[in-house]
Image 1 (cartoon, rainbow, N blue to C red):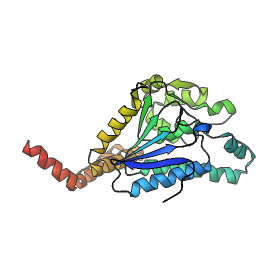
Image 2 (image 1 turned 180 degrees about the vertical axis):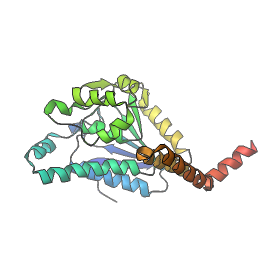
Image 3 (image 1 turned 135 degrees about the horizontal axis):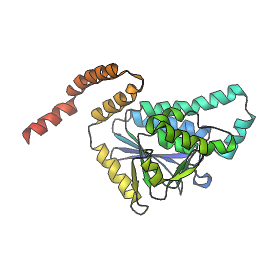
Image 4 (image 1 turned 90 degrees about the vertical axis):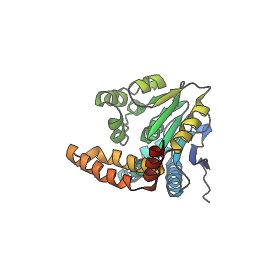
Length: 254
């Protein structure tokens, strides 16, 4: 079993929970926590008992983004070193996009900069009423470059432009209104609501969820006709799965 230093990993009732565990640093990101996150994602993908993954943060915040040591390292590193560092972060986004299970971000407190990027890279974002989201990188002359590939697919181009160029921190309600997040729950009920949501999603067909996620994201670069053809091919494959056959049988018996 891996010895994680900066995150917690557990599985209960088909839900794998990955918790960023640096509460004293507001769950700030560095190379180690990114590498541990990639390992935990792979671990959940290989575990056939896991049907849903929940990513959250310990303490009061989801994640404040890169820590001071990471920022100092970036400012002093060579171009080659910075490219390698950035690619490591990008590989985590790819792993989340290609993961066979739905990934839920459960956000309390602040999700800022790279921390907001981690949340945005999840398939679903559930937020507490008091949660805050933002990409303030522009305020230090930086940009959320890699997450733009995801952000522009989640919200309108104009909303994305405003978020990344103004660097404002917005409320969970504002994030919901622009389509950045899926649900907002009251702070008092948040944990119970997230658990119920994850368990309900975990009750669905694992094969159907995996196939649907794969197809949805692969349609990004397809023409309309190619997307329809891919849908037709996967439609036929889905019909042949045991989950679909059992589901149809149950439906016909009603």
